[in-house]
Image (cartoon, one colour):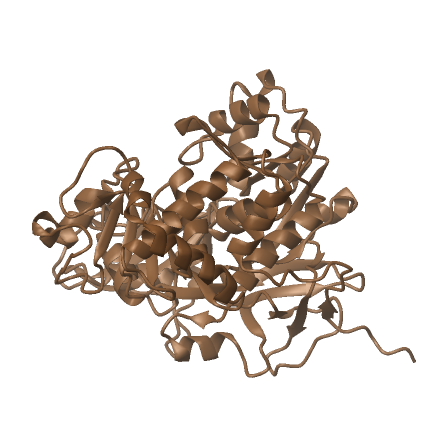
Length: 564
């Protein structure tokens, strides 16, 4: 009797891993393709070659050293997509600094937590974006800025933050202007930057990205040069990328999707990074693809839906598109078919992963049959191992459901300053426990069938209900709260809060939402609020969130989203 194939796959590849730091890779690409367009930023009228980008990166990196920052120090960036984000990303890597990505949607409580958790010594910040007045919020947290000289901040609420660098041409007390930082460097700092190029190691931590935590607080996934440079590179290998490609990047740079699969992938091949706008705008994406003749387009499914459904969609020439990646949340099958048929993206791929794995673990191939690309997340990435296990940790036979575990170069170094959470996530054999339920078939194709954790994915943003619950517990009228995800046609899922008020108290949904405003990111504010006297529970007192979800689906007449 032939033994049944088991759910274990490993990504064999003729392409070796890159044994380089991010800075070394940028220098290598600039030497090969100095005149290739590296970066196009439509809203800033920026159009830089790889030679020009590398000069700007080196100048800013030397300026960061002149500010007194040392390799291993953390530098935050709080900004929407722009050229300064990209310069900071590569400059921090060259200076050996650890870039801390701060979500542009963060508000006061989240910003304070993030900066203090990883002890940021410096912060690069935009002035404002949409309704977020970044500098105003920062001055509320650190009023000491008004009396501080730049680089010498001593703030009670932000005790580790010394230096703030602001974007734009206006001046603000206590802050440097981004454009002035390169001039701070002299011969000493430029020489030190050259020395660092020979001493930095590709296993050094280089990036911290916050992921919502089941404990109620975000965890800082700590990633190395090796983690994210290689993941970007192999995403490009999968897409068949070359220096002739032009990559439209409407996804946020603070997320792996933008900075790894967009920026680092492009820099590994000499392709062009193209930003259509500060934040996603479907019309600007369509305009940019046509005007810049982009061959690659990224997005979460909601972005592609917005582009396809835009009233002016039919008027654009998108024939330059060839490939791209759709990821971040489950892809509706019909959306995938329309992207292939109406956007000319015959080689579009689906990807699956998580921030803690740099991010991609599975990706469909550009030549996979369409039925595979609309029903699975593809096959395992090069140099990555994956297994599906049962509750006892045993590998399950092909086709059976279990938890997906990942191991390899892409697994993070750990959660910053949190050994306990790191040990919960990464076992002693080096396997990252994803918390996702999956199947792997006999041909190695993976299908994500559910989530063990109760994470909600809203428009590509991962939100853990516990984080929202912890915040809502601060409301003086709230006795108990449970947050769930419910289906949503536009975002895939929306948040719903069931709230039990304290005796004698009264409240309405608007009051709860107003309490959240400006304190937590907009995508974490529950769309639906239901006031209840009790929650459905088991006999042992465990909350039955699936019953809450079923109730809301029936009450709101929601339809479960059919996904690939």
